[in-house]
Image 1 (tube, one colour):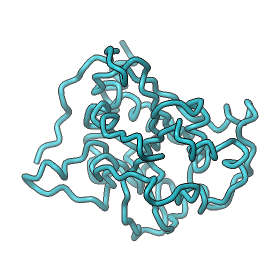
Image 2 (cartoon, rainbow, N blue to C red):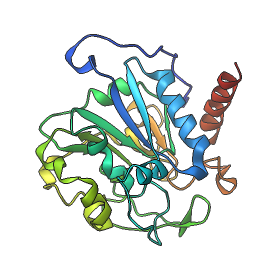
Image 3 (cartoon, rainbow, N blue to C red):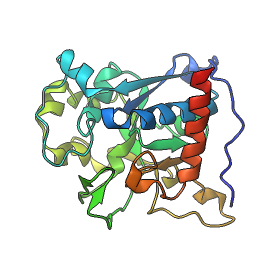
Image 4 (tube, one colour):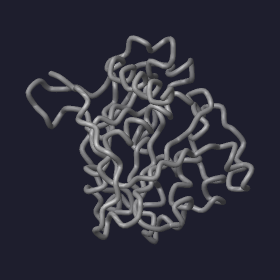
Length: 253
């Protein structure tokens, strides 16, 4: 089974209704994982056939702008554990937008993901049934277990949906982790499902030989990626390292 990179397409803007405005992609940013953010961003841009706008969600900037004042909790493993839920607000509660953790590597055209959007849903995501075996992840952060784990790590937000107007800065700063990460402002039928290959969990999901429907379109290094010393030998490390090398070479030009 080969997961070679697809042919690179230039980022372009086309003219139909969905393509008039750039597709907004908000990426969770953590100062410990700057290279992960840069490689995630690069992997999207290199494969996108549509006009995209990639925006890092930086907690420090949100604090300066008065949008985030929540005190850090003991079990927060990243700087975007809660800031991710500001995505509809940051998109002005308009159109569709994606939130994605920075520890993703995209192997497919983001247009394919955008084309899955269905206006009857408030959000859409991969609905994992995931119970990690490890007790720690990344650089020693505590690995937690909770219902709907990893659902919030990559979400298509229908930002104009009335239910998502609940996600004001006040709510994001004061509501519980359970309320936010389990999407408790929504009814179950308002949460759409997308194929697991768009949030393919390294170390959990499996590629089935000769079954293209199991080939990852976006790999999520949820336990920790090869930018962490402890995870240099993780599955698909070579794909991430190849992408990093391309990013580094391009920044030198």
